Length: 330
Image 1 (tube, helix red, strand yellow):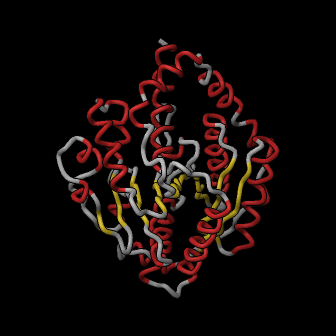
Image 2 (cartoon, rainbow, N blue to C red):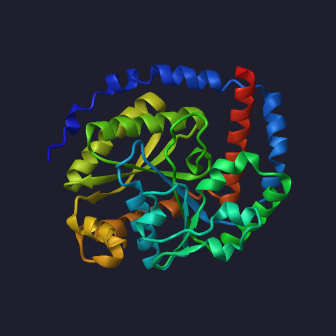
């Protein structure tokens, strides 16, 4: 397979996002008074886990097929294998989400818990050394929760995050300005999963630019997936880093790469992580190295004093802003 990574054109990339930039900057012009009102409405969810130091890392991708869910699964397994207590939030609806990839059936989810239809333990699913909590329906219903449900959400999040070292979020694709994902929350670490194809590079940059414009996010962690070797991964990252630094003033940090490996495909077919199924494979070793990079970056950048609290607070703010923008448009 040939990778035309040298053909990345900075000017062409930047020009293709001019219309997006204008639209996003226009949509962001909400009055201070409106934002204050939105903050007042969100006050009930702002006291979550003040002392919790859980690291929240959202994995995102610019388009389907980059392997975001696979990287989430294998990173969770690698972190758990390193002795960390790991929780995965699955934002994606079935089919083809992380829950399905492990052959698990989610009878209940976080929205059921918040609405009092089941207990928290009924919604948690067991992974190999880590737990999974389906949250796709809750994310879509977040804006519609009543006060009692918001209070219950606060209690549930406090309970589920107790003792968790790392929370990974397999983020839903952001298909429109109304989309809500943990990747929109400032203060949450964002790990961009990309590949070395021309479309993979372009769509990854588009996503980074969107998040930078909408949320003033200036730091992104990068993993390059499905590459033949480290040299290609470094070249792809280097091109992307130059564009982001010069055009967005954003900082991209290379965490590692995962090679093309038939063992990883085989593990996926077996509904297992490659770390568990084929620990001696090149992809498993890369996933273990990636987990160590994640942990080292955690120590260097203690961004999440509030843990899940900060994530939910910013999501509520994002919803409030979207609601205000919709009212202005009307």
